[in-house]
Image (cartoon, one colour):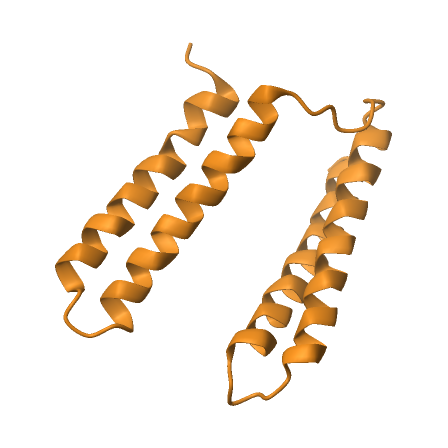
Length: 123
């Protein structure tokens, strides 16, 4: 395993765990840890940003270059993840919305699947 992949693996795992734990702390009222969850979630985002910068530097690439395609890809990913999450909430949490929730979840899955040809291209 290359050093850049190992460092990305470790920093990515730490960042995602911190971010996920922070979101749980914010969103679960039983934990009563909203303020602490904000700090932990922000720390996770900082670790993920450091991971991205470190990986780009180790690969000899310039810092992230924002283009219209990159912004569109991120917006599509956010929209797809939100649609999938809302569909899951509709089916599992909210009463009487099973079929609409499945439909919204499928739309989210299709949006996320659209990222594959957008990022990798078709050959």
